[in-house]
Amino acid sequence: MTRAASLASALAMILAACTDPPASASGAAPAVATPEPEAPDAARGAARIVALECSRCHETPGVAPPAQERQCVGCHRAILDGDFEAPAADLRRWRRSLVSLNHAPSLVGLEGHLRSAWIASFLQAPHDVRPGLPATMPRLPLSERDAWDVAAALAGPPEATPPSPAPDMVSVTAGLELLDARGCYGCHAFGDRAAAPPVSSAAQALAPDLRHTRARMTRRALLAWLADPEARRPGTSMPRPELSAAERAAVADAILGARLEAPPDAAPLARLPLLERPVRFAEVSERVLSRTCWHCHADPDFAQGDGGAGNTGGFGYPPRGVSLMDYPSVSSGYLDADGERRSLFAEEDGTPHLVRVLMARHAEVRGAPVPGLTGMPLGLPPVPLEDIQLVETWIAQGRPN
Image (cartoon, rainbow, N blue to C red; front, side, top):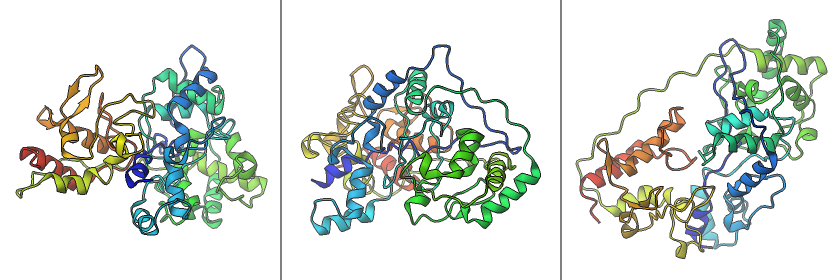
């Protein structure tokens, strides 16, 4: 398998990188969406899951994993574990660059575990839930109805959740002491109370920030999880906490009711000024396009027939005809929603389209997506501002080859 083929299989599809809107300082659960009058259709949702190719990253109920060359996380895991058929020198080189998509949570066993309403809300507005995962759930082509159908297929119909009583602050305090004493912060962040630890294991990578639990889970589901994680979701990396029933209740009170500060507002973000030195395509390709963009924008003839979601289509997206592998391909542009060929360098409000989508990814991770624009790279960490500066300088200089 070629390097490009492995890159083409690495699009970010991490549903488990799932966060919620921040909990209020009072500890009350954030609001989640309520379904439309039409009942969610689990069968329709299951078909949508197949169409979105969720199994390329996640273990998916009722769906067999695709061939290895079509897997994202599976391909990365095979490389990291030494199970990928390739020359040793190539494996060593690839391992050095495998940062994102090395882990993804399973979608099996979510019924009775996660709130269906939360899943529907998250699919419509993905945000970071698991600080240890560099990638997050990408913004997929899902309508509101699609989101509710997919949630029903994964977690069952929405259940009525009665208002929670005010937390017992004595129990909350005891629960916070237990979270600290039992080493829970060795894997989990908890809002402003505990920072995410450095990632050195799958358990740490997949551990969600506990601030989001109050939107993701009911108290009943949380208590069942604390009693025996493996029984609830076989294969989980969460160890069984050695807690009595009273201690589990206190920990649940702390997770669901502790006062948390709202996350600080992100500092203003602005593009860097154009560089004064000459920039040519070779540098742009080496620093930006061939490092990240080839994952979704490869040439089919070079990548075993799969040009990636941004070129030949995938993950629910239609073909956009964007290959970024060489100068002529980049210059050929993309297909708009009407199938018309457009330039990647056409300006809107003085900003080239390619720069707009790169900056839009920064906006998405800061919780302010640009209406009508999908940020790139899809679901992966944003391209550094210094690299966007390089791209914009190259475009401003007339895109010299």
